[in-house]
Length: 487
Image (cartoon, rainbow, N blue to C red; front, side, top):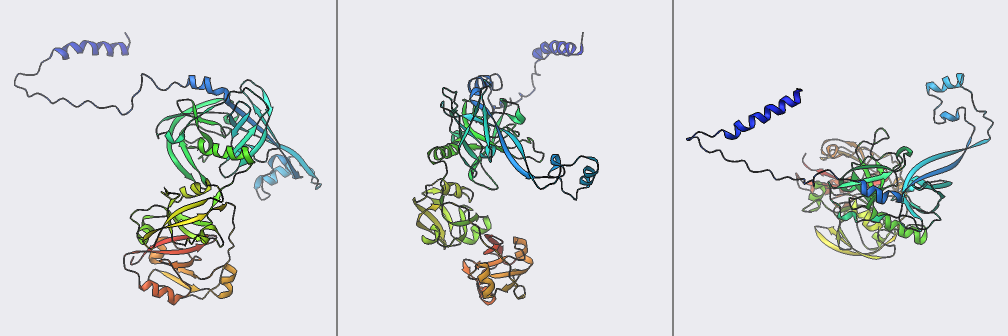
């Protein structure tokens, strides 16, 4: 008789005794514990994804790309990224055959793999822009082993969405869902080709919605813990109804592999891009012509806002739609086209999804009151702001802990400034707030500053233990920094 059987037998034998035992006649009755209400309800088992995979798997494709690269002769083509000051460079130079360096360009091919999915039976395929970027040839492989050369209809790097077309008909296509109806914690499934392993299926849950990632101003990502690895890029993210709710795009990793954080582009965002790519081959976005930053609780207090919300306008481009409409640095954008702006990361998406030339209503917070502006959007494009350095004279530190210096007219012209004071040294409250040497203070409490005397007078007007908003220029960026007077 094994140990497990003995334990079960002992338990079974003890049950009648426990059931027959009665409390003493004078013993007080014990209160019964309340039954715990289950938070998660399961219908007998964990989710079964087999039907979903069987029905939708055929619409998921493998994408392989080829790029031809020309490069002049290098000593060790198999280690072309090895710097000459690396100790191994000398080793390879002595013991490995070298490629002749005659100055003639050598041509070689690079290959990459990704995923995609069919969105219409006539051969339109959705994937990531980075999967097909700079590719000379794109080949789509279906689950039935058929291969097609694909044409890139268009790609948008800002959202990482690309649209492909293959010459085929009657193809299986996915069903699209509504990512806005998803809830954090619900199950989702990814199908793709991680590391070239075609039609691999992984599952997990929605970890968060509306994630903003550095450098991705136009996408509010879905975060999941679904295992996504190189090669999954461009593949679909399904809900339990078998509907695509996202396009797997990025992972957070310190190793290059899956670490529990993966991000998908909401399918409604991707399909909006697809519509523009199919129509014109490019994407047009609205532009206000401003630089913005997050509204911290300290900044909100300094502007008289009850809550830290909206997008704080740090800079306005000359000749931009915002300038023409009368927007000012220090305005806090609270609503765009009647919709609340909860934080600064949401505004670029709201503006970018609006057609250039549209007349929009923008509600701003200015001088402790709301004001509505009517702005006709321009078309979004990349802008570069020139920067330079000045060599000013140093002034004694003020009670904020700032040693400021005035900037000469010539240096202001070079910097493209109308006013401003250079931060030469930082200590005290200013240092605690994050100001740095080399910052240029443009305004205090919404008032432009051009001289040290002017700054000192404005500072004397401020109340102790209150946050003062300083508008500063740091390199190519403009931002507001709250400094608490009296610390």
